[in-house]
Length: 439
Image (tube, rainbow, N blue to C red; front, side):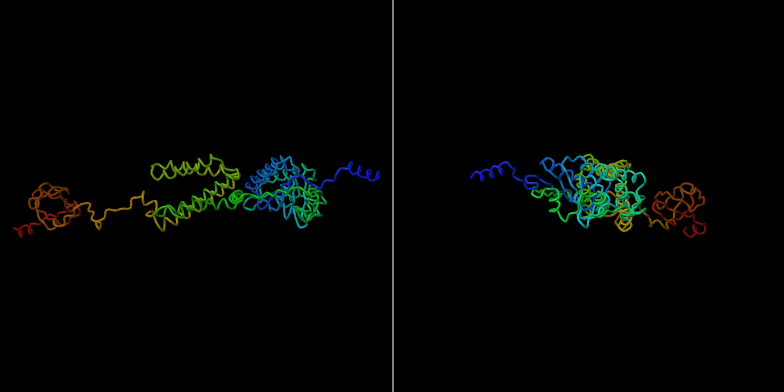
C-alpha cells in the first residue's frame, strides 16, 4: 500500500500535459486575388477584430498575383503594427505585392507547389515604372526582409532584375522567384506544409480554436469596384448613360445605368476608405451646376460643375495618375457617342426638345410674314413724287410706295406695276404710245 501511495504522490506532483494550443485562439485571414485598397480595408478590419478578441495567433493564407503598390504599402503597415504573432501561409502564389506582404509577417510557410517573388514594379499599362518608383519599391522590399531578420539580397533580387542569382534561376535581367525548397534554403520560409492542419501542428496550435474570417458581401463588392480595370469602365458607363439619356424621352434605362455606375463607384471607394463625404458633396454640387447650365447663360455654371465632378473623382482616388487616365477614357467615350448621336438624331429629341426652339413659322402652317399683293400687277397709275428710284404713285385712288426698275421717273408720269415682292412694288414708266392706246 505504501508503494501505491508513493506512485500516486508522484502523479500529483507532475503537471498534467496540456494539448498543443488548447484554449488559444487562431484567426485565419485570406489574402487572395488582386491586392487593392479594398483588401487593405478588409485586413484592417479583421486584424483589429483579432486584437480586440484576444487572438493568440493570426495566419494569413496568401494566394495573390500582386496588385497595387499603394495598397501593399498600407497592408504592410497594418502587419507591422500588429502585436499578435502572425504567419504567412502561401497556398499557391505570393507574387509582386504578395511577396512584399508575406515578407512583413513574422514567419512564412509554403505549400509544396507554392511560389513567391517576381516583384518588379510596373505601371497600370504594363510598362516599367520610372526609376524613382522602382528605387522606392526595392527599398521597401529590402526593408521588409531586414525587419524580420531575412537576408535582403533575395528580396532585392525579387524586385531588381540587375541582381545576378543564377543558382536560383534568376540571372541578370530576370526577377527572382523562389519555390518552397529554395525559400527554406535561403531562410525566407520556415517550412513546407501540405495544409492548414499540418501548419497548425508546426505552430503548436493543433487544438487551438480556429476563427476563419471572410470578406463581407460589401467588402467583396468594394474590392471589385476599386479594381484598377473596373474604375474606367464604371466612369465610361456613367458618362455614356447620361449622354444617351439626353436624347431619350423621359428618364429611362440609359440614365438609370449612368447614375447606378456613379453610385457604385463612390460606394466602393467609400467602403474601401478612399472617398469621404466631401467627395459626395462635390459630386452633387457639380451635377447640380451642370443641370443649371441648360437654363443659365454664359457657360460659367457648366464649367464649374465639370470642375467639381472631376475634383470629386480625384478626391476618391489613391492614384491620381490612374484616375486621370480613367477620366480621360470616359471623356473620349462621351465625345465619340455625343458626335454620333448628334449626327443621327440632331437636337430635336429627349431633353433638348424642352430647351431648344424647333417650331418654324412657315406658310404651310398658315404663318404669313407679309402680304404679297399680286393683284396690283398690271395696274397703271401716276407718280405723285419723283422716283429716285423710290417714291409714291397713285393707282385707282390708292397711294402706294413704289420703286422704279432702276431709272429716274419724274412727277405725274404714267407708270405700270410689273412686279410685287411683299411690300416692294416695282413699277415701269409707260411709253407715249402706250398712253395713247389707253386714252
